[in-house]
Image 1: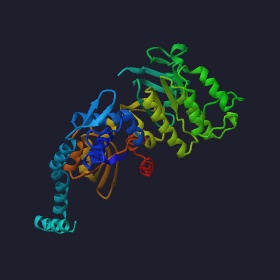
Image 2: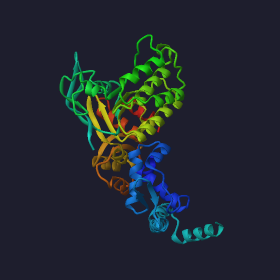
Image 3: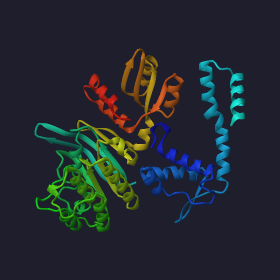
Image 4: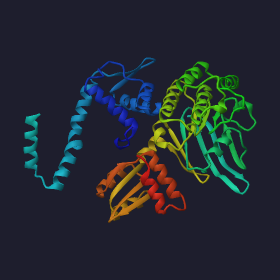
Length: 120
Length: 306
């Protein structure tokens, strides 16, 4: 997997979160098993299991004994909430740092955002 | 976790040459361990000790709780696929399969048939007449289908093309997931297998350089670039493996000692990239070698594919 994108288990967890957020992995549907993830991503099954377990401890997935892992009800809303709260750190901090470096003012950024936003 | 194999203070001397010096390590059961190191580092010797092909000059070797040397109880549960494995002259592929079926108690004939098809092996051809790659493929079939509780592959891919190597990795992963067992894999193709590994054992000049969880290793390797002074400052707080400088700028591969290292580097104004296991291993081997500062070595590192 991608060496620049953090630990592999974290990447596995993030990809599953993405799938839950965009709805392709619906709530109460079964998540892929660690062996399926391992085969698909060509990674060690223990690493895949670590990614899944992270989501279990976050309350995003839950285990059904002998069956597998399922997406918890409310998982999507929970993930959206977390991502919204992380938005400023993840996107605004680097944006402001670069703007400062090249001399773009906050007012100019705001104008750019409005223009882009109205086009989108 | 239980230990599948252990070396305690193992030294292996040959006439006028010490292959391993005071090596101690434990291999956990049901994990895939990558045995890495340069040519002549001692990888094959270590595997020969684990599989009872040799007795250490000093120290202790335990596999599945017992000494492996001339110990059938252990050896019957081991499978060792050697680089350039030799077979009796008249052996055809099917003879090797039949012999393996009697040798390995957990032999899976269906899996072997599947693999023979996957690798397009001609059953009736004499093994000595096979190409290098097909010879390697025979070893891989035996190693996987043996389902031995401890399976060791010593550079099993020689002569195999990229497609066949990918098939090997995929089959290994799939079968390991279904039937967890202890796998030790020595390889130079670190990039290709790094994601498969759970544990890494790096040896250099017969000594253990690195014995660590693969995921933790990946997290601990960083490449930092920036003003030479800041790079040196950052490097002094961690384990600096290699540095290159050009016009006041430096780039260094660093094995970090703290969890906040990445942020500390950014705070110093350095740009930070994660570093692949292969780059880390190359960096560690170079910094351990007496000629670490030689420019040719640096060139070699630079030329390594990412």
